[in-house]
Length: 354
Image 1 (tube, rainbow, N blue to C red):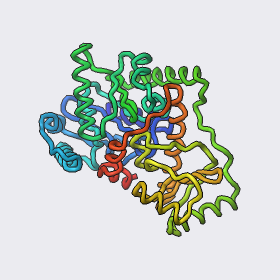
Image 2: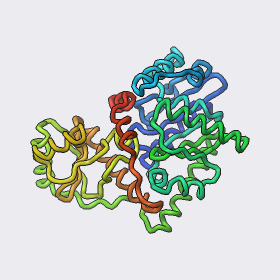
Image 3: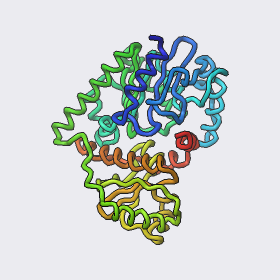
Image 4: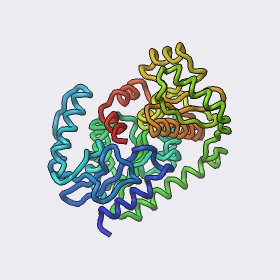
């Protein structure tokens, strides 16, 4: 099995809903000259060897010594253009924005995911302290905006770790984001993931927390139809797609970039009316994509797929919030971090591709 076949197999194994939602997460493999990374806007489970974007590592390394524009939008546009110049001409697609981060690690394989079991820790108030206790050899990084800034912060963290310990970290936990696992052998990736998941499962069990979300019964067909009509009238869009679920405790704030991308930062609570939707939109700047009322929760979007993703991410966020209780409770993203994701072109592109 060559390295592209190996990373494809790993992508499929860790592309399930236990590890990622929607187009979240990314994977890569490398040799001395080339980095192959997941294209932006694709799913891990849908990857094939020929789909990976190949980048010239020497060209990509020019990013590490530049001084990009100060403004976030100008900076990310500049970096995106430089990254595209590193893409080999025979390669389709657009490389994951985290390609430079993957390139900064020497390990042959890297698998980055956002498991709810892990994010119960990374999205909690005591996450850093717990990480130091449970995974003393791991590198922990406080929240950094995704993209070039994150890549450079992780690169700096890796270099500092190497200086201190004489090697690179195999585990990197990112606050309110997820985990990177790096190794030269595919089976070592599998072993490390199993170790991380089993260790955290023990802590949740000790805290008396189940690893599934409690969801109430789905309302009957008449109630769902009535609610859907109410939502479409309130949003004034008769063509809206709506996905319905039994009641669960929807998270009250932004938990991670993926949750913002697919379900928005905030859900709407209470009966949707013209007035309440308008108030919500004036406050948050968007039409609600998750609405909780009458003992049910609804995902709302322009297409059926997006509506289902909104509901799926709302459920994932609710589970993360529940698990975070084991480590001091949930810690939502700051307004600045939230606003960066809400206005980031890369995430708009990823959502369109999905």
